[in-house]
Length: 219
Length: 103
Image 1: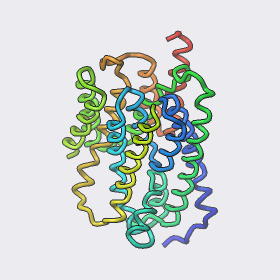
Image 2: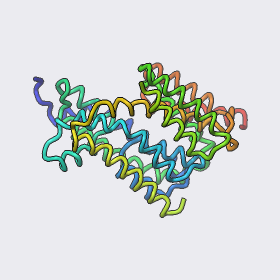
Image 3: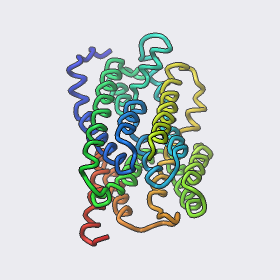
């Protein structure tokens, strides 16, 4: 068993990730304003959802002209992976079921990865998980606030290429997943279905079709 | 966007996210088959989101500065650069191409 790491050590390791998360949160705030979502709603979303890919996906749907229900379902489905990480960290969390379910809200991809790296196999390190999670949460909400204040000052989002940030982000999120063969199959299927349905259907339908194909091709 | 719609968006997404993060710690003995099956959702949805972003208002593929942005993001991800670098580079190349060719 490794010696327990101090709070200082954990926060120092988390600092570069926190910086990247901050920049990411600022861009979320800016893009939310560009998508005409009120600033308070963007900050509230970061405080209550705390999941970059889901929040950006919801924004992307709104920007592409989709409705609120489509945006919620698309973001929600992208968060399904947190069921798996939740099961993986369950034994590392203290307290009874309710406290564990609450502390489980601090799990994001980055805090999970760091805790898994610092812990023993099958048992992510509790202090790393909770401290990193709390640190990234504060930075995520603060960065969003900064972004919503910066958004109106920046001017035309297209001139800054901000509309191209969405497809670039989704591509960069997708790429590392493609090391698994089933993921390649699902990605190709999802893109083909979306391209095929987009000319004939409202924005929600291509995404729903892609989700079904993803479930179908998963194994 | 109207305030009530925005609130619906936030609370809807927050409710789903809360539930998904809570299920594991609350019921740690879920069958693995469920999580295996859902692992196909993220790649399919992300690819579809890229596709949707590349289509115009008529739903057909629309070739503009977003295409080089996507290609650059893919190349930089393949080189294992951090996510934020890929995104900023994608936006930057789009902004530069637009400024250079008045698109």
